[in-house]
Length: 221
Image (cartoon, rainbow, N blue to C red):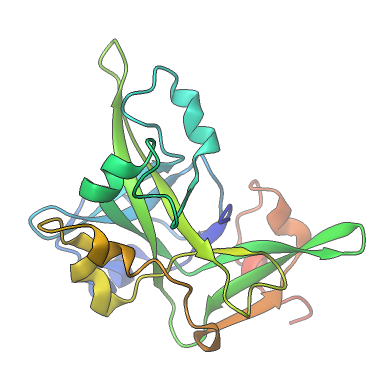
């Protein structure tokens, strides 16, 4: 799964790196992003737009918006068929800006956090889907989920799942809604393990209250 990540670069870097043409949100660096937070996402609406979605997808048809707390991830193997995600996958795909993500590995009876990041870049894009929900009184929620796939060989000793990472060259295909979803489905594969690095970090990341550069600092570094 993907239950915590970091996005550590300023807005200007995001705009430059991904060719953002419009921003609808105020993006600030965060080193410990947890479900329920508003997160920076890229959508395609007559160009790339940076907007904010609450992390935890609320299906448009549900009567209870609290279901979003259980839908932070969508599995690559079923995202195109599962009722909660299938319409969003066909029509509302997004990219979640991230610098890296966390997992927890077993160490005896304890679990210790690790940080996974790209070796040669400050930013990656995680595959996501988004949805809009409206209450009876007209209140509107914009929410999203991160798509996961089976872990690559680097991450497998820690966890059997990892978020799908979409390369910049594949962004046009990811956002293409003109044809069948098979093209987008082809991108839902594990990222090459030789392009990522993983290292131990402080237990401070265990609490979302802690949000500082110390969260991503290599333990002992």
